[in-house]
Length: 149
Length: 344
Image (cartoon, rainbow over all chains, first blue to last red; front, side, top):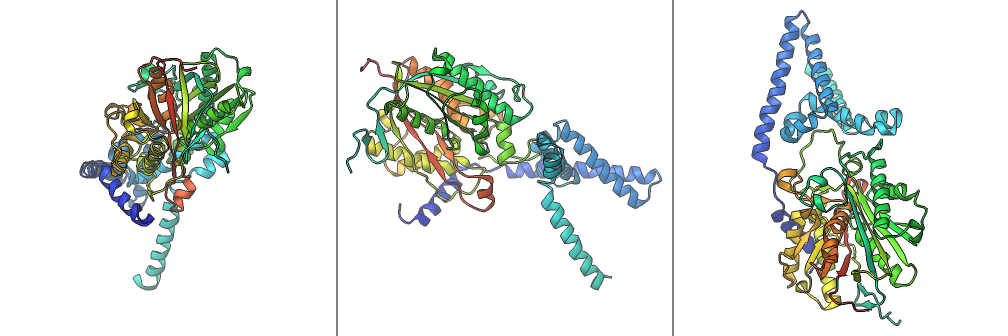
């Protein structure tokens, strides 16, 4: 081996050649359709609630709540992780994926108790999404307040 | 300083007193019990919780039951065990310590990540050869669920695993070493150094550990003057298909050519086509149960005469990975022989 850095660089090349890639095209197609299906179902819910005398705002909230509930139940039943294995981003990106990422640590860390387990670990995965989601909406709010109107 | 005559070369020792494997036991979980080696394991536990309330407790039960089984198979009682040496992947080696706390024997806890079985067999052999023990019980364990919980994502989270990832083996492999005569013996130990070629992808452990395995093999061949052809089998721990390919490539660069007599426990234990394990098996139990369940009986029957067994380990933690560190790796080599004629 020559220099350490060179050995590392060469090895990186070897690893790249030896490592099989994920089937990206197949994954993208499945994600497109499964994600699309979830969103279409969401649209169906939205229309359903609006047609049943809910205001547009309430109907949107109810749609989210319904999707979160269904996904949470499917997680508890062990069905959502099986879907996620095949659908990838299709089941991660919609709000159902968010629900799955909160429910699954809650189940996983139940053994450590309701406070230090479920309570402390529930947002293990979703925590960063909340932190930066809220931060981003604050920034947008500031821009909107000063110049957007 | 005068070198001990047991040392040959820089990293290898050759034993002067017989270090015999008196028994080997393997207990595995449901997925391993459906794999290609299912009929070779002593016990297949179909309940992944093994009747316990948590994955961690289940892993400890795998340790306890299998350790007892190994001693029973050796025809001994627990009181005849001078030392227990074992380890696992959980923080503070909890799987092992809670597993053996009721066994009431002198204990050394080991951490070598997935190379723990090699580390335990190395140190156990030295204890026997050095005359410090008559019998040593050693082993290594891992559990798919407790490992996922500690190192990756919650089990019920719907994620996709990359093609290079491996599947942690659930189970425990244990061996009883002793001075008493046996058909299979450990004759040499080559101790590995930490090797790190800068791989940071925790989903490609085979690639991270392959340089350590290759380095170990080269050190072993250099120290002993042997080559790959002198072994009926060279068996690495849990490199999987990606890691095996890299080892073959790395050694070819140095002029050592490995053929089909080189395989990896992670490749043998699962069927990637039907079991969806991607690059293969991993975890402390991977090399431990595959050796104890499948290869030790082959040595015992004389189907294999001399093997080089090299459990491999990736010595990172979730914290170091999050801090951007690469994955330091290690491998431990053991020459295990089943001589045709009694030599002593």
